[in-house]
Image 1 (cartoon, rainbow, N blue to C red):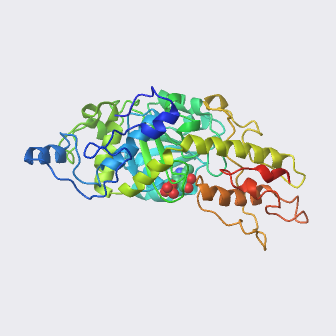
Image 2 (cartoon, rainbow, N blue to C red):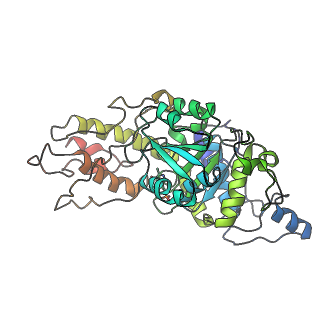
Image 3 (tube, rainbow, N blue to C red):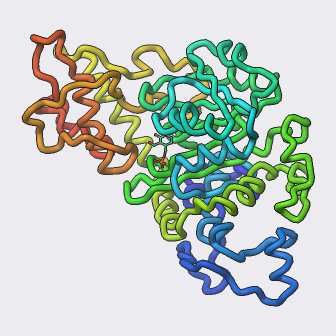
Length: 414
Ligand SMILES: Cc1ncc(COP(=O)(O)O)c(C=O)c1O
């Protein structure tokens, strides 16, 4: 169970979900790098293994270090519980598998991270779950695509790579009207900028690999249960019928407002096993402690860089939501400044033949080094010559420091 959000974000990101280690009193989170746990007696062995008793048996199912990370993200998002998984991709996959069956479908924004797109369009259909992709610009598109077999709506809070922002409250209202869970990938938003549960989301997934970690050392994912969806409505038989694979429990009754996340743990984690290593959970906890500081700085620097580029004669366009008045859910962002991340590539662009030293292709966002790299790439994307005969693309002197979003954009004006 997550802590109530009585404390400020900065306090929760450092302390939530943790008590001093009961064995040693260690104040830092210990890394329980163990596959399994001793039971104090046979009754405990039976109770914990069957799910009747809380406790640890095997790290694939739950681990004390991972559990602290789970509780911390649940507290930051205001959810009822969470599950740490090996990558963000598994968080997305499990979040859908946990609410669908063969023959079901989901409705998703077509502006999705490529991995999620392929999961929905190419992989899940082979297993009987199809996706209708809709243009999220008009929330009614989601409603038009819903039918009686629709078992989830999936959106990214801030789309990757378009950095588009969906009219969140409108989509949440449609999901609620049809008793369909709204699953939100909040990787780019982070709970520091936006808390989807306060706006009607029911499940949140994260690629912790990005901003949650911030160090760029570990791949990880998180699923957070809002505890606010009626899984007992009759649309989701896995939640309302006795589970032969799990002591005959009826999940919607047995686990209160944690039914979704407990079922995800005991079906998909137990049976397919994409668990996070305790060492990575420790590293994510290290990262999450500075989430507010990093995102605040990244947002501030992004705004400065976007403003600089917007006024630059060699810049074709700047894909920056705030400038384009595209924060339609702007009121939803509860922290100032409401500016978001930096421009991203809209179409494939040639990499300059003699790329500057810092101009690498990048594969991840949100890390302290990845920011620099991705920003260098983003500079290429936005510093677009006007037509083929235009000025060469690529970062120019003066943008180099601006490329490091956690660092200072002080050299921009040079
Ligand atoms: C928005 C978003 N969601 C999910 C993922 C997948 O996360 P991971 O790389 O941790 O599997 C990514 C990866 O880039 C992403 O950008």
